[in-house]
Image (cartoon, rainbow, N blue to C red):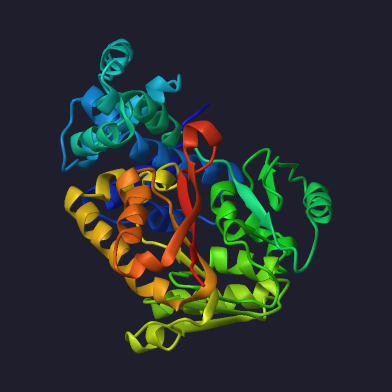
Length: 404
């Protein structure tokens, strides 16, 4: 592989924004990819994947390059040289790569790879927490899996097409997919491709949604005609899945504290042909109280640490703080206490997170069930999805039923 100056510069600019200005990697990369209209898909893939790679392995590369934060541009070029050397890419004779000790880099890599928190590129506190909550053996496997690049998984919109038809349509565009056993609406891309530019996407035939995330709507045990409340709907990935499972029959009330996310959900629902979704902005507790004892099903896709989706958001490792985790656990319990009251007697509730930490998952459910609001509920079943076992994102979901 030959390195091109303009692509390398774009990568260094992106890393400066992510590491030094605290910007989100996905947003920075979106902007970078619009930088030069002459770039082909290969150029854009290089910029996106290299940037994500260096973000993912920040601690490891910084240790090998012997640089410390805040990183200046020279530091970032040194980290870039480490990345290239470990990938077996020949460094051009640019001034940024003068005196790069290639042999020493490989030696340092072998040496540092014996220390998990450096090898897997984690802050100390997160490595300690993972080991404390999951045990040494499982955490070692899990964090390794969470550092792999995620596959692109599509969820077929059954309101508009079938899995077989969509697979054929994408194949005609040169995009090959495969079915996934145990995931009825999923198609996995054999190679990465820009699926968002296809007519099939513009016509609402599919959404991009990880396989683990696709398990949540199914877990809710819904039937067409029910009244379902999605309490933390966000931009509506799971809401749209619920709509297709309900065949557009019944009512889905999609709630969120962020009005802008619900606006995005409205747009997506239109594209998907999902007509039974009613967005409601939670601007006061009144919105929730109005629905007490009224819902057949309630989904709480709770805000969480996001430890299960680090493959997609590698910069979250560096943004996450121990104090945030304590705060979010309080929020999760408050949401469970409050939103569970919308379930009518005989109805069901799913509590879900994209975290692999038991303290955000089964421990929250146990705490809720022993509380005043939780005594009306019985535990039906739960599912813990770990990335190293499933090959997909880490997730948790618990199904509870309200006594009649």
